[in-house]
Image (cartoon, rainbow, N blue to C red):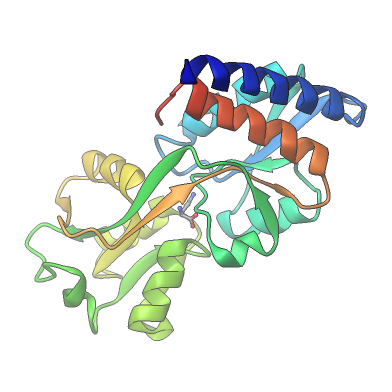
Amino acid sequence: MKKIVSVILAVMMLLAAVSMFASCKKEDNTLVMATNATFPPYEFYEGEKMVGIDVEIATAIAEKLGMTLEVKDMEFDSLISAVEGGVVDVVLAGLTVNEERLEKVNFSTSYAKGVQVIIVKEGSDIADVDGLEGKIIGVQAGTTGDIYASDDFGEENVTKYANGALAVEGLKTGKVDCVIIDNEPAKNYVAANEGLKILETEYVEEMYAGAMSKDNEALYTAVAVFMWLLTTVFSREY
Ligand code: GLN
């Protein structure tokens, strides 16, 4: 019974959101999603094509809105300002909801849990989070991993890379002692590079959501409703 009520409510919300959104769609009818495609399995390249969970979610949402999806690959630390300034419509990038970002953009309901983990070389003397004291930590610039590491261990001990792949390269070549990054890409990087491992101690747990401009209430409502539908009514897990 509860499920029926929520489906009816969802359909009503959906119809309202779609009709509100239809009245203010852009002429070219594209939904422009920005991401940083070095974050498998959420976004990565398969040949020339960007694929992954976030691309799948955006494709489903664009389809429901009767729009064509365009995916733009950008530096991670320019994503928030791009969506805030209306250069792109939505950011889906394994993007963590936090207070600082909430001041700048609207977030949909969250669709996945992320955990910041620590990658080290096999045989490293770092065994847990306390072992990071005095070490050189590699991060992706502008990520929550960057923020936590800089706050907890001092900016002077943090080396910022443009993306996760470069940070992992820095670890392999001995430029940094460890990399702090989200758990799913961490698993992918460790599987693809011999001699690395993920420490069992988790650093920080967080939630991912889609970000949209505070100036486009109609798009925000439409995307947020579909995201809510995907994760709640259809119980999709990412
Ligand atoms: N979840 C992290 C953040 O939002 C990292 C995301 C990413 O690198 N794509 O900051």
